[in-house]
Length: 153
Image (cartoon, rainbow, N blue to C red):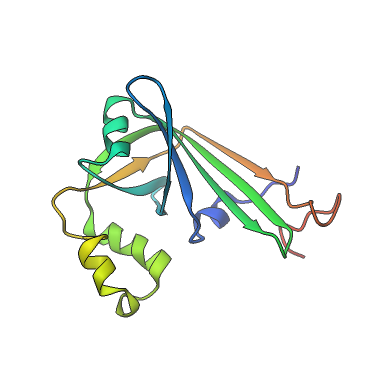
């Protein structure tokens, strides 16, 4: 396997999947936007959201992120595991997260911000995972054979 720098995947506007466990032990998985800051991944949540409730009861979780570019032959898998904490909303961090996915604030959809991504909403929370383990898997050889497409050139 050819290693890759997790920071590369963490800096991209990719979807992450947050895996938690329900009270009866059933697994749950939710796609989320994220930002990587201060050696932790930060995800959005709300006080009444299922992920927050699951993590308040059992903070063990996993986050999986995949960078897949079929045309370029890139397939990178990053797994983060550990114990999450539910933190108060940080409007500044939330804005940085939105910038990552939506670009400059001037281009943000006003309806989306007012109705979905309410930066100042009192129920807003941030899920913080400072991973105890990080797993990388570079399988960027499905087009190239034994030569890896990643890292490029």
